Amino acid sequence: MKFRFLLLSTILVLSSWTASGQTRGVAGLWQRLCGPNPKLDSVYIFQPYKGWGVGLGYELADNGVSINTLEEIFSNPVKAKFDYQMRMVTRLAHSLGVNVAFGPLMVGFMREIGPGAGKNKAFSFRWDANYFSLSVRQARYFASPGGTMVIDILAPAEQAEKKDAIPVTSNHLAETRSLVVSGMYAFNRHRFSYRAAYNSRSMQRRTAGSWIVAARYTYGLTVIDPADITLLTLTNGLGHFMTHQASVGGGYSFNWVPYHRDAAGPKDLRGLRNLTVNLTVAPMLTFYNRVIAEEYVQESFLNYTNEIERRFVNVGHISPNFIARAGICYSAGHFFVNAWGEYTSFAFRTDSREQTYSSGNRYVMSQRGVYTAWAVHLQLNYRF
Image 1 (cartoon, helix red, strand yellow):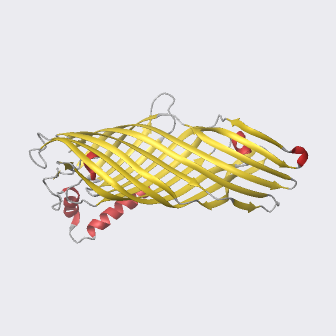
Image 2: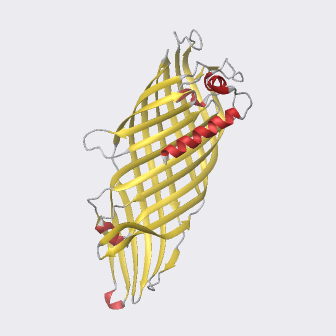
């Protein structure tokens, strides 16, 4: 999937430039990618030559998943309620990675390192222009699921009982996959450079800010190991929890430039010194929120296969959301060091949904949950 998104994004970029009528072959494309933009105010923005660049990166990240499943089961003569609160046991993950940049485009890959490291890894693609940004990040990480279960047996009357807060633990790792596609457009197109603090392909000479609009699509999938009999027995076989979200909003992005010294020229970067700090905040509204729950096919008692069947598809409620990002970049000649932090959170909540099987068993289920992630990045880069 990650290569499909990279390929699609690259095709869209190249198509937009070639369709403009100003691009003529490879030389024209190279000029559009690396040449200066004549519409930018040179008093506020310095444009170095934007050719190839490489970088090494370090990331400290933490991901969290919390899913509450409320299920009512009607299987004559049994009537019962299950309230299961599942949480991933979060942990700090240390990752190293590399990135390659060409003009405004950058591709990166990171993988977790260190003792006890899991299989966590992330792929990213960015297209950062001065006044807009498109980013695609696909991540995969593993954590131990756990939580509590409340069981309330209502019928038959002679078996009625309620067991509160039964602790649930697991020796199996659950997998969570996420995909975040986000875009941002800044209205101050001539004196503000959003990318100045994140990839230094353009530099902010003087402090400036801009109102922005933003959009984001988020996909999350949590997969319980089919060998995790304890959890699957308590969730009645539910092992896949999936959500799709689309959000739009607006906010403000601000570049503070405490220090700048000009280079000898766009290609001769001797003497260049620049320090830029960015803060971007954009409240958003999630208008599309689709939640899917799937169950493993049970081969026999306490034995589940890898096959899954879709049980519930539900549309969640409209909910508030936000984008929060802060970055700092210091440039010295052909080298630049940048660091940034970001926080992502998206919640979902569904109404009750009923489903009846051919066996006559009836299920009523509702869910609510939240995916959270924060990360701090540090990169050392060199531009040729």
